[in-house]
View 1 (cartoon, rainbow, N blue to C red):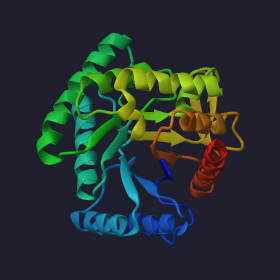
View 2 (tube, helix red, strand yellow):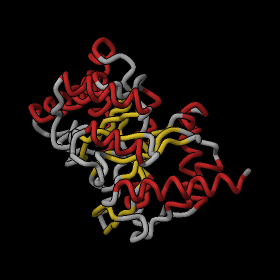
View 3 (cartoon, rainbow, N blue to C red):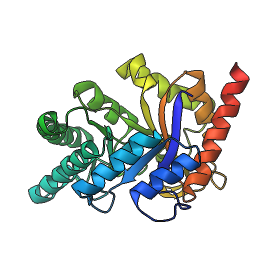
Amino acid sequence: MSFLFGTAGVPRSAPSGSTVAGIRRLSELSLECMEVQFVRGVRMSSSTAREVRKAAEELGIYLSVHAPYYINLNASESAKREASLQRIISSALAAHACSAVDVVFHPAYYLKAGREETYRVVRQMLERALERLRSEAKGVLLRPETTGRRTQFGTLEEVLSLSQELEGVQPCIDFAHIYARSRGGVNSFQDFLRVLEQVESALGREALKSMHIHLSGIAYGRGGERSHTTLESSDFRYAEALRALAEFNAGGRIVCESPVLEDDALLLKRTYQELTSRQR
């Protein structure tokens, strides 16, 4: 398959909440990737990282990492900006220790700054992170995520521009967030094709072969994203997003953030298999 499918965190049906237990459960379910969730803080000892790395390598599970939610590289206070930068670096170092490549994060909020000024500050902060990681976590990719709320930095154009300008940065494309941020305006096969066309235009064909994607159901309001939901309870047309990916012959990882993690990850995998089998 051109895509690996998996969960954002340990599957609910795992016997415990440990990352190793999650890896083993994913293998039993015939899912192939997991995004390790450091969303409340980076807490993984070196011995645990070795165990995680060993389990992932033995079972063929591709790992990525989601950095803490408490990141705002555009915070008004310099101490908060520095703390945010350190959370990204700590996530990347932990990712490197357990053989994960992709570090996903929500970069910033606009606050009172304009979009151009926010972009300048975020770019400058990421340059600092990359400078350190080139020596301490070589090969790790920072993946700013397309965000779902209109107050958040992270439009498709913003994350693609960062990826163009900074070596070591690639996008995390969250189709559900794009849909929610547009308040339902981006929700058809043709809409999703246009998203992929933008990725290809900005980053080239190679970027489409190793995508890192988030998919889930989602609810939205006037400001964009409200909450993640199950796929079937949302109006988000996830099958159309998968069809667009198949049409583009894209590849990489699709991580499900649904409240019913593995159930919806398996639904995504089945749907994608059915779509691609029809194309043969």
